[in-house]
Amino acid sequence: MIIILSSDTSDEQIGKLTQHIESLGLTPHLSIGTFRTIIGVIGDEAKIDAEQLKAFPGVSSVVPVLPPYKLASLDAHPQPSVVKVGDVKIGGGHLCMISGPCSIESPEGLDAIASAVVAGGANILRGGAYKPRTSPYAFQGMGVEGLKILREVGDRYDVPVVTEITDPRNVEVVCEYADMLQVGARNMQNFVLLTEVGKCDKPVLLKRGMSATITDLLMSAEYVLAAGNQNVVLCERGIKSFDSATRNLYDVAAVAAIKTLTHLPIIVDPSHATGRPDIIPACAYAGLAAGADGVHIEVHDHPEQAFSDGPQALSPQEFAATFAKLEELARVFNATF
Image (cartoon, rainbow, N blue to C red; front, side, top):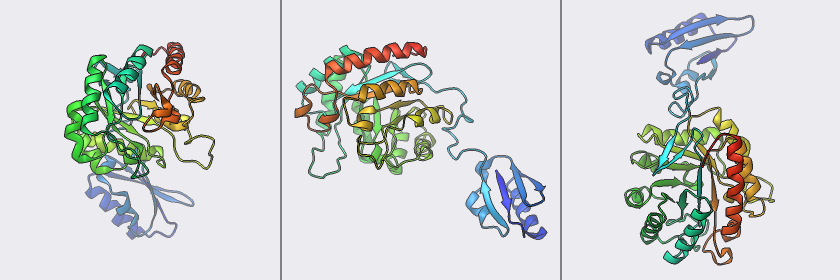
């Protein structure tokens, strides 16, 4: 950590500040320049409250050297983490293909879609049982009945399943049926929920919030990690923009940037990012090229009849064609689904 002092800071003020740093078991290193004086702090930054330091007379600013997300950072874990969802590995050259409908609508409907996506290349089945919708009048999901359907269909096709968790009170029941818990964009900074999923033994798929920075996303992951759950997979699913050409702004650059900051795997969701089936395949390829550890694509056999997000779903045939090209691209990067 570097503490930058004001030009008029007195020797007495510097002395009090260095004494405080030493009282924390850290070592202050004073550097007096022509125009600026700084104090370099050597030791465990976790012992220091940067905001408290700013309150000392003579302190102009405080610049952390290490990121605030201690457990999620590459400093804490230099090698890429590999997260297991059932028998599927994510990270370290292992790719996941998550696919399925936005919402679970019926046993027959999910079975038909699951059959198609697994045949088309999906190795994790998704389906929403609890749906946080913008409108209170929109379909909110089938709840526990939907979870039971998802589990049954996943077992039938021998694939692990992931579904969204929206309420801390439902963590136990969702864990009973799902292999992976998804924390959606709207709940990315629901810190009570993050702490609760951090206490469970199921992997967590953490989606980036619609107005969240990369640091915001990593700090949310830190909540899960700090609570004890080390199996976190990040997801870039688009952020808010002024442009209406796509549903959200697909921040594919964030994938490459995040790879330089954290050991956690990251996947992309071009379905929610773009909302446009005509460009979902191209955006999926771009995500993989940027370093993503997997892709999340919504599929529906009758998009015009879907209870939610039908307009952004690929048909089973479109999905199969997209996955075939993803497999080709994966080989270029020595990665496998």
